[in-house]
Image (cartoon, rainbow, N blue to C red; front, side):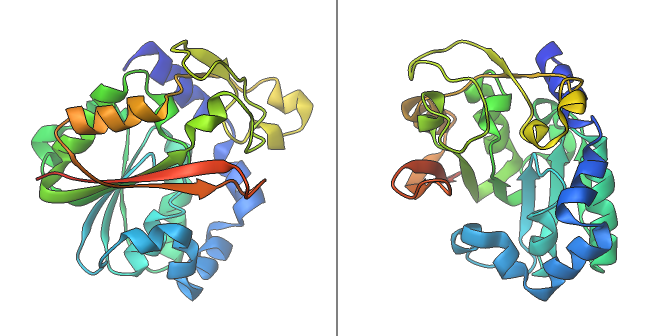
Length: 251
């Protein structure tokens, strides 16, 4: 495991289970919301799935299962790959409370066992700020390509690169020039919700933020056929870009 990924892991295992309980509810409370309306819990991402029943989904950096469990409730066979054992604990307890099942593999996404998982998935899906955790986006996209069966689809939704130059989504993260290739240190996504005395104790993450062209070119150069690129308004200001979604196919 690369040093920066180990550092990110330490950040994402700092009191994270308790954070989810406080902010998303107990696993039982979260499961009740998921089972009541799983399509609603998928939010805008539901529009990118053609079907669910029996679809094999690799949910990359799937966190606490917030999208994996609704997908499973709709009939998908979901495997979460994530760095945090605390995320796994919350996700597995929530899935059990929702009377569904998911697989959850804790480890470095760049070190996924391709003898076991390579070419096994119909869909690779990620959302909510993933790419900046990986310092070589081409290497990351190569892994995504390898996970898919021929004809499989990648749904890659992430924070808009506009975030490099302005904290539009109010994450209290450092900003840089748009074309900067620097590695920057910043807090994990939820640090700002902790009391200040705890916030100071949370290990920092190391981020590499990408331009739109770096993201699109990495998708294409990894062998994908790019099918769609959507931009979504920021939840803080609908007049500015907040997120994007790439749809790409492994031909």
